[in-house]
Image 1 (cartoon, helix red, strand yellow):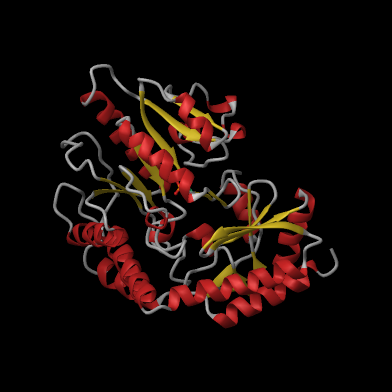
Image 2: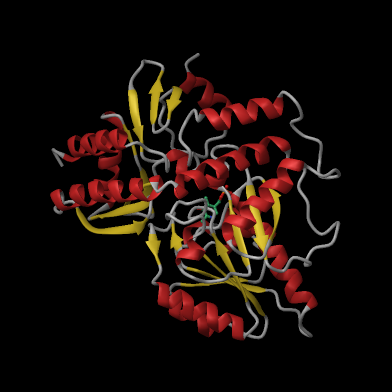
Length: 394
Ligand SMILES: *Cc1c(COP(=O)(O)O)cnc(C)c1O
């Protein structure tokens, strides 16, 4: 049986998949079973931050799993404690972490922290959480409801939990807030929603307003975190101090990990929250090495150099193809080009794939670029060369 046949027979049909069989990866280059190479401008949707086949991470994982992979959270886990310390230090915030396995699980943790905060700190129970249109917070029943994309609230999975509402625009959030509102949850740069950064002043104004009202600010950094925007956290770029931050995707470099961190360090007591796999030796040893690598990469100036180089090439491509694109969006290595229509966007992605370049879509009309943070200049050059060829005849 071919890979496609096995996949179609035995795996539930939830993704519109490309049937390519990748066999090897080196930084931002992938090779399939026919030795074709592909430049990866997706990093597995912002996950493989340190590149494919990263030797340092591979060695750490091997070393760890040859010894202990998992013991449960009933015992202290050294790599978990050290990763928590590293993440808190890199964040610059006085916070503590909880470890899960995905972005959605991290956001579930954030929602639980907010709900408990709302229960113990006020006479009336505060429980409502306000989010934004076009936001994406995950695929569990609760995080579907927290996501502000109408198409996600399909009746297939209803009823959804109460206490979530969303507003299209940042300015409209204010009017939704009432005495039962406990938190506002947002991305600073909406990833799935179209690589849409919010203006810094607007975010700072919101943060100040929420602080005055004792309403929690939850920043979903599942996509923006782990240096994707050039800083460890986009929250630092925006110069805000959130109450709760969630991380996943790039912070694990490919191992499943989700982290919720908060400055309300005493909010949980034993029994309030948990996760069987969360924070085990495998994921935290790997993630700690990923954080060390990216910290060094940032401090050496190489990350900023890569961002500038990528940006220059992207702008050059954009200027040469203004007939296809009308806006350039994003920050750091989280970038997008708005395409005039949906159909053209699909064609660009399909053509690029045929020419050996992996690209993503965000929202309906954004061509999205999320390369590994460690992508080389040669890989950037080659990727844009292939992209140029892919759009030539459009
Ligand atoms: C990907 C993503 C999630 C969901 O993460 P999973 O690991 O797929 O559960 C949540 N929030 C944002 C901003 C994301 O980009």
